[in-house]
Amino acid sequence: MTFSISEFVLTHKVPVYSKAAVRQQKRGNMRTIEHNTQLCIIGGGLSGLCCAIAASRHGLKTVLVQDRPVLGGNASSEIRMWIGGCHGKDNREGGIMEEIMLENFYQNPALKFPIWDSVLYEKAKAEENLTLLLNTTCLDAQMEGNKIHSIKAWQMNAETFHVISANYFADCSGDSILAPLTGAEYMYGREAKSDFNETIPPDVADKKTMGMSCLFQIRETDHKVEFIPPKWAYKYETDADLPYKDHDKDNNFWWIEIGGEWDCIHDSDRCRDELLKICYGVWDHMKNYGDHGVENWELEWIGFLPGKRESRRYVGKYIITQNDVEAAGHFEDIVAYAGWTMDDHFPEGFYYTKGHPTIYHPAPTPWGLPLRCMISKNIENLCFAGRNISVTHAALSSSRVMATCALLGQALGTAVAQAIEEDCQIEAVDIRKLQQTLMEDDCFIPWHDRKLPELTLSADCTSDIVRNGVDRGEENCWIGNTGDSIEYRFDADTEISQIRLVFDSDLNRDYHNMPQNYPLNQTKFKLPGTLIKEYRIEGVSSDGSVHTLSVSDNHQRFVKHAVDWKARTIRFVPASTHGCEEFRLFGFEIS
Image 1 (cartoon, rainbow, N blue to C red):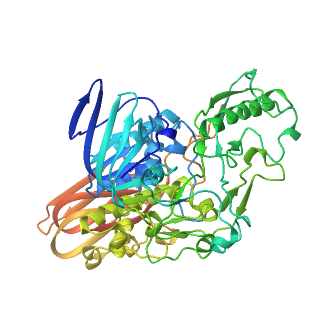
Image 2 (tube, rainbow, N blue to C red):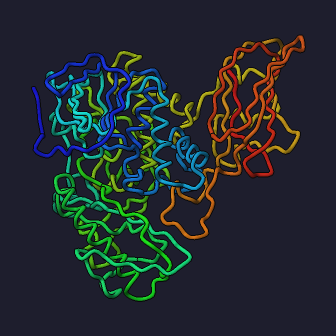
Image 3 (cartoon, one colour):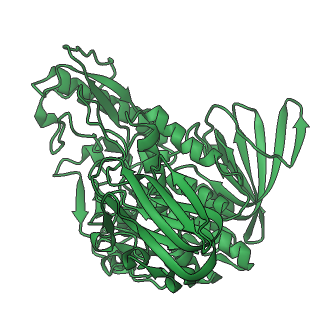
């Protein structure tokens, strides 16, 4: 059977990038391209992007459908929210999320948003197994019983329909577009306290959510700048008109938020119109009413695409509740973690006048997220990652931030690849194997130890700390000086196929991935100085012959080198860093 929601599908504009079409069928001036793939992902935010990259790297033919011209979702140049994640020492997210951030610091030291978009685009296009469809909106799904056979998407600028058949469909769209299209069970709004025995929700369930925001950014100049607001902007002539709303120039104006009392899906344009009136009104107030220290500042950018916090949430094999969060999520099938506070914004958003517009309920750092919360309860081959996972409203307030969503995406992409390899349903995968694969890919999983290669354990090593299987925390870091090295030694020549390295990217750095404003003298955010930049790896055979691998411009935390060596000794020799005087290394393993 087929479900269609054409009455509320939004079509968006601009180019098409399609690697491989199985068949093209012309219909007048329209055309249809059919794709047969293993995993189809809807939504190109950070969860969808990391899901696609992970699945592709683990061998799956993958199609990523994104309804915008750029990737990144709330982090993109269209919305510009910085990436938040788990609080606490050494808890920064690793894996693909950290890889992307470090690539951005390397390619984009001035932190320009269009370049950030390009970094995300490059990451997707670099994967041979990944077909990227930008400006493509999912609008229909074809079902076979309780299983999705295919989805249909429309590429407006190319006047092209894409019909995509796949083994699995991953909805990372945020709004859970495949829920109404497939009949998948989902939740919307706030549960009652009694529904899941929680304390945060209201006494009576409702359809209210957290709202959405249009952000704006400002730039400092060396001269006075006047501002004339549009006639339709709201007027806030005194600070009393903006109660409980900090509006100094160092704010990112997240509190310009509405929509929680409306419909966060169907009323998106209505919300945008209201948000623009508020944004211009707030900047008019800062410029023209009172002294806010912005005489030389100008409006650099204002967002026309609202960033959403909450809408539909799927019902999965397990629903995470406030109680699970507070108990730290010690699930047997944990595959990711969160650690943002339960940051529960009032549905009234900007129009809440009784106090601060959100309540920060404490949450453990970290707390665990299970695989089951990403698998549909009633649609056989539907899974999901991002803010639309199977959580209550209260739990969502901690799990919704983007670095957490990225971890969920990488975990899901890896899980689908393993399910197809093992020829089983996702929930039936060997969970220990999945956890080990994720940790091998630099995804920290709390309370779990990573197994080391037998070859690494069997050799003599001059520093056991680099083979303890823990890739974060000062106590697990080798620290060396000029002339120092680390060496593995075997009794005889041994075949080496891979060398795994984990460098120190300063997981406790306190700056965001992108700026909130642009002062005249900008802080130069850059690659962490703790990263080793230049190094070489030497493999010495019993006969004295030497294999050498030299790297002169490393800018990543997690690096794997494929080699084909026979050696008795393997030596890591650091040469320079991106600024730190000492050499810092978490992991050096051979297999």
